[in-house]
Image 1 (cartoon, helix red, strand yellow):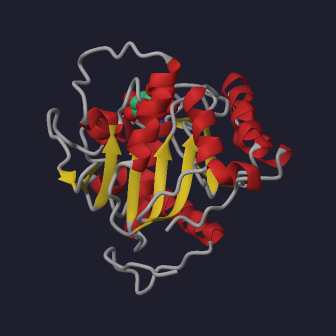
Image 2 (cartoon, protein in one colour; image 1 turned 135 degrees about the horizontal axis):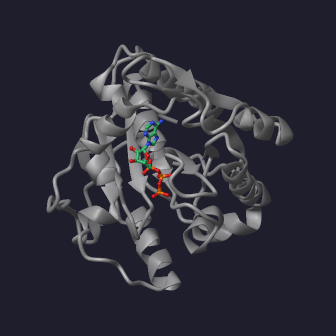
Image 3 (tube, helix red, strand yellow; image 1 turned 45 degrees about the horizontal axis):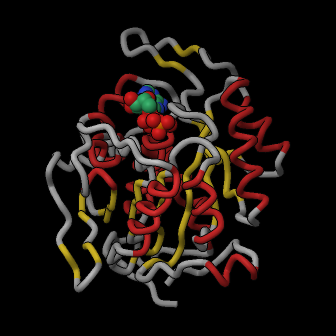
Length: 284
Ligand SMILES: Nc1ncnc2c1ncn2[C@@H]1O[C@H](COP(=O)(O)OP(=O)(O)OP(=O)(O)O)[C@@H](O)[C@H]1O
């Protein structure tokens, strides 16, 4: 069961209960293309490696990318569970649901706001999650319908904000943080992505998107920086090929950073893995 954290009493009355899920963490960014989906999938896989049962809900209705990042081939559809639910698909040991599992992603989706919000709510309420400890929601960028529906109706326990270090991304990240604050969803931390470019040829490291941005924004909002990730060819290639870095390089430095971030999130959610195996389940 979700712990129903974060929403006000009034919102709670209208909020949906998501069965089979204990905690919900929204991964958001104000700006597109900062690596939110890449961070979500790796964070989720790192959390699973830490011994939790994990789910990913791809809330990007227009441009879902989790299917590709999880290596789920085009055309694979979820099975029905009971009258009106779908079983999430499983990949690399995590449960996942995405609009990409329901429609042909090669066709553009020309939907208006209320339809998008409706589709999102359906994904949320009609997925038969199996004893998930932490459900990560990969939010679409911005502060539109989906974000508002989520913030108002879903008992989100906390938000993770992904940003790159340069000013324009930070400006948008601020909007994201403020939106979650307004609806009393705690910000669990900021992930600074692409904070240093490491050349795959010579190993030279250069801060092409600036330095220290995540830290500034975290200090301003009294939040913590969960971690910093480099801009590397391998992070992109691995995510695009369906074997994200945490799977492709389980002993690598980047994986270490993701696992450290996962531990900090678990700690803030008040969770502890029992025994450390990936198939451990928790009871309230
Ligand atoms: N640290 C990184 N190093 C190298 N490439 C990265 C890194 N983070 C993300 N990318 C790449 O940048 C591109 C955009 O990343 P991603 O799709 O995760 O961003 P997003 O913020 O979720 O985008 P959108 O706004 O479309 O939802 C992808 O091709 C991804 O592989």
